[in-house]
Length: 118
Image (tube, rainbow, N blue to C red; front, side):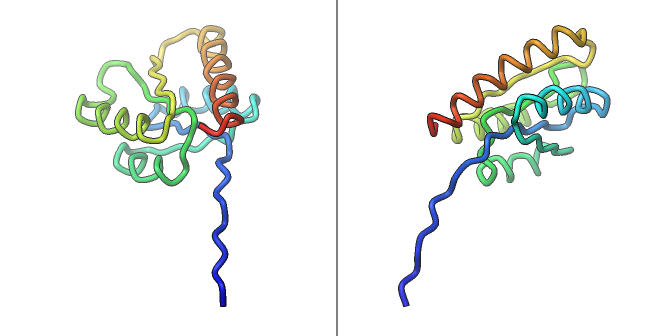
């Protein structure tokens, strides 16, 4: 019996990591409307395990005070580099229009990367 290797096709996706609930909801609404599949992870360790599996094109973390510790940010950054994902840091208090615009630009670039296969 011959085993067939199934080629993996990456689904254009964004991963939200340890964002406050309201910010995560805002990001999910905008990114979901762009065609990206949006996944949410509450903890950095879980996100670091999922990034190589899901291979998101965009990873969003909070840059506000008291969010990710430097070692956690370094781990996330390392995983993003490994899979070619864009890392986006956003603040909780960013105005809705600014957040939406920045997320749409990042989503557009993520979709382009997914179509190019890198």
